Image 1 (tube, rainbow, N blue to C red):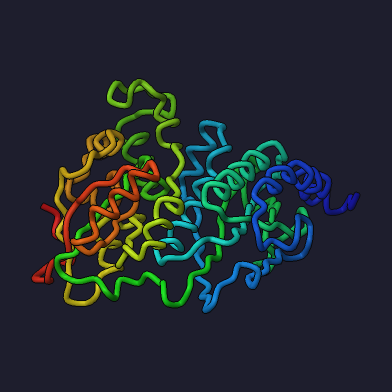
Image 2: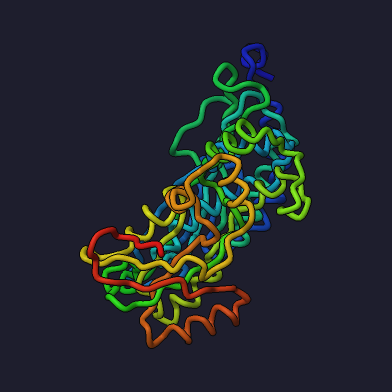
Length: 357
């Protein structure tokens, strides 16, 4: 055991223990194309084995922000990894790509193998949901490097002993001819919304300020409008992963554009899929808004329309479909067990790029 490193606050033995604990979680995410297992310096993936003709790789990276504070307060760490996977793969699938593999980076003040196993277990759960496989390599303890997949970095002096941060990176692939970039969207196209599971992983700085500072709630507060569930449990509801909902639509060539409703809500994200000169008309009330958003709005005295510029407000994805193929898309989603709502349509831009009415 490197005693000097131990004296500096980095436990190499704890790092080895984490690797031992997470092997079974990583193993259940195995998929065609994975070449290397856990423990190498990098993750290997055989793209040629998947049979693409003109493959285009699409990458995405993200974290879960201050939702980690809720996990810490609840001492519940087994779902935050799902959030990390979701934030990455949802960006990638919004462009038509099937996620291939996922890499995580965990930085902590003190390596607690039991906690980190919970985190990685959640990552594996997310990868199973997304069909993305996370190769892991790297060495336990020490500083992380961006080239090394699956890094766990113990950083005393940078983080408190009970703190950690979590980020991820995913790579997906799509045939060049099937890239979804919104370029074919036209006025008159119908907007279909896919429901969220709640707040997902954006806006938690405001969530915490509104609920805990302004309203005086705690993570253990129970509210009747939330079915008397603990507030922390509601907030930790994992971000929905939309890969399995969207892939059948892509395979049927039904989708003209996709907007992942993350930070910035509708106002910032819907225009990202629209060609210049077009706008989105969103019909408020055409889908159910989870009650947690009303709780946040009232607790923080947030303007109602501003909520749509911050949160997903009950829709995690908005998909643009040709009018004559909407029924086909809705049937495919229903067959896949997915709820979906017609929430608006594409219009010629007059003023704003998103009209909420």
